[in-house]
Image 1 (tube, rainbow, N blue to C red):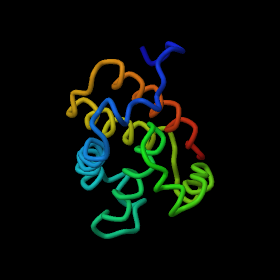
Image 2: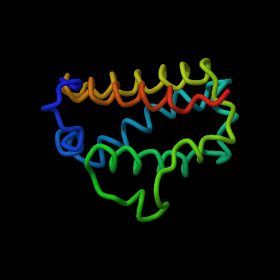
Image 3: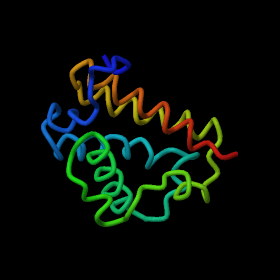
Image 4: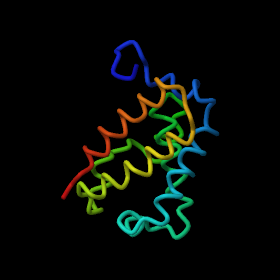
Length: 130
């Protein structure tokens, strides 16, 4: 279980089959973001390609995959990187809606989905800045 101290989130990368699973998760997430009137204006890249790649790399690294994100971009500094964007409770909830749908669509094992959703809830709330 995700809240169980015996589950190590760093094992998720291997449990879901590696980078391909994170690329699918992120692609599914961004399908929702592309049409979202609250979130889409926060993304500068026209086709979301750069945003997709960064999120895939970040999530893969966080969940036990390669450290490509940090090698290319340095420390994640999530609050600093997201500060310019008006993230309020509504934006957080929209982000969570799209991410929870993406996680659900992947049909990961229960403990993996729970661990991911626990992290996403914490991180999305942490990034509220308005």
